[in-house]
Image (tube, rainbow, N blue to C red; front, side, top):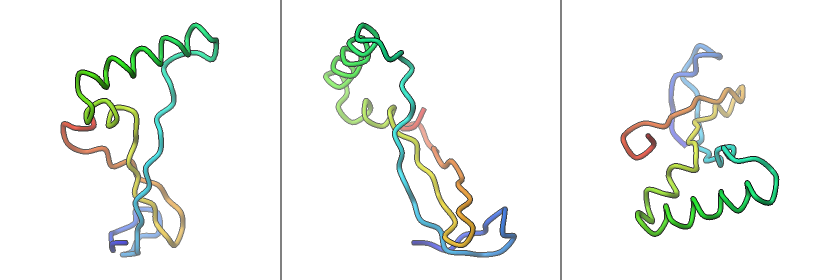
Length: 78
């Protein structure tokens, strides 16, 4: 954990980092799920590292109040 300024608390507090999967841009039907599988499969073949980073969001969470801040920074998260 690292110490950072929390916008909600208004002071320096401990923060932890969490990683969550982004919601799918595909629907819930079997056809849409198959499209999602193919997109992930072929995206992973072309770039195994880049494909997985496109599917996650990185957050920093205040351990005092629970305020989440999205921290997708750099080209790897675009």
